[in-house]
Length: 207
Image 1 (cartoon, rainbow, N blue to C red):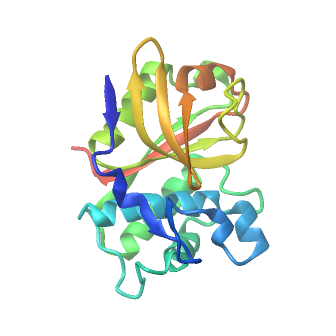
Image 2 (cartoon, rainbow, N blue to C red):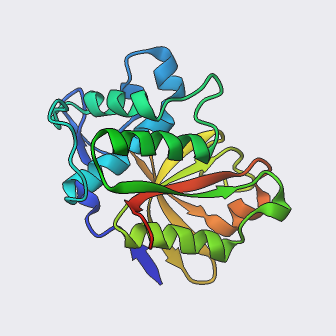
């Protein structure tokens, strides 16, 4: 079974240099610290752009869609890295909820944490169900990897954007890492990461 965002073309972005990219890139930030620590706000910009273009939320009028750095800096103001970066899914969730409240959106951040302690983690089926729910709600899913374990397609201490998922003998996540599309083995990551991470998507409150 394959679950993909239906309109991934919404993530075609006009980069600051004028060329077109797929997704935002933290290297566009002007300040060195923001370029180093900005993967979380950059991922948030992917989520907001998709949801805005899908008609699920309105961005402030002051943000010019033709200037991607405006949205990236806006996201930084709420989804703000600490001195250790944006190193927990709770930080992303709480910052995203502050942002959503500030723009008057009825969407809220939904989170699944992956604990450092392997005995406390969700299993692959639970993690896949969470990602599937986010994609079904037509939201990209933010994915924090603190340690990639044996999954070589991930960078440690890093946020990426999940665009889709294939479930067969294993479970493969289709991700966007800045502007690069990759595939990640979800069960392999869950069973070999030594630091955990988590997932966040934006959707209406569940009832």
